[in-house]
Amino acid sequence: MDSAGSNTSNTVSPWSRIPHYFSSIRIWESLFALPFAYIGMVLASQSANGQVWPGWHSFLWITIAMFGARTLGMSANRLIHAREDSINPRTQTRHIPSGLLRAWEVAAMAVVGLLILFVAAAQLNPLALLLSPVAAAYVVFYSYAKYFTWLCNFCLGWALAIAPTAAWIGVTGQLSYEPLLISFAVAMWAGGFDVIYGCTDYEFDRSYGTRSVPSRIGIAESLWVARLMHTLSISALLLLGILMQLSWPYYIGWVIAALLLIYENRQVKPNDLSRIGAVFFRVNGYVSVQLMAFTILALVI
Image (cartoon, rainbow, N blue to C red; front, side):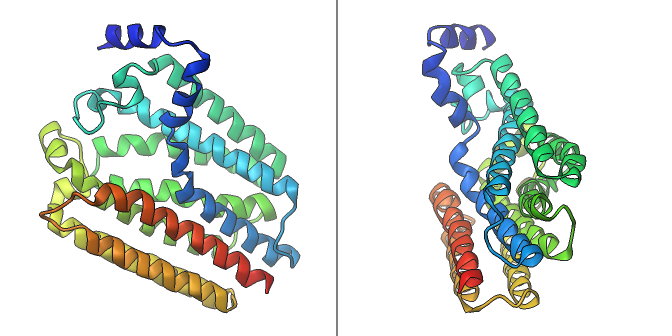
């Protein structure tokens, strides 16, 4: 496999591989975590400064930090999972198994992502810089969880949940309960949809020996776990709105998010997982983006 991958990548010019670098980290999936980072950012600015906009400095460096963290986390994920990706029919077309990128290129991307994260955190405030190695370590090592614990789906949820709390710290230089509540909501939301998505690897995980909620308790039971997690997520978002006394547009976004999650869970059946791909990307992207929009609207009117 290594020889074939090397030959494939050598036939492609470095410039033409740039799109592969971005697609390998699935940059479009930033729609999941980035809007929640911005929710944490604007709520922090409103709480600390009495205004929604935190300024270009905070906005740009938070965005850059998110890009660095995603590059680091996804590159590490691809390296750590390269062996089973080459065996699993669902993942054999990923960049390392297919030879579109070599392992050293993906490792270099991880190093670049780490440096970007540290530089961005340093531009924000001392607490952000102090905690950035903790965030970096988690987004790398959560990928190992599937080898040790069936709770790996929850671990992924908490990887995305770093975003709103990190953004809050990036603006205020302090930690408070509000971003932790947002992070809990994100962890339950993202962990829930990862449980659903993990059902597609049920047979492979059981045969290969990797762990997950579905491989531990079965597909039907896992879908109920996802419903419970999404219920907890929506409940936390409602509590956030109440505690922060957010105005009525926030609750419109909350209702839409709840309806989208109900729709998502109703689309997936234990005996029919065919709609998981469409649900995973489209619906969850809508959840985060529209909630961000309505949160900002709630703060400006």
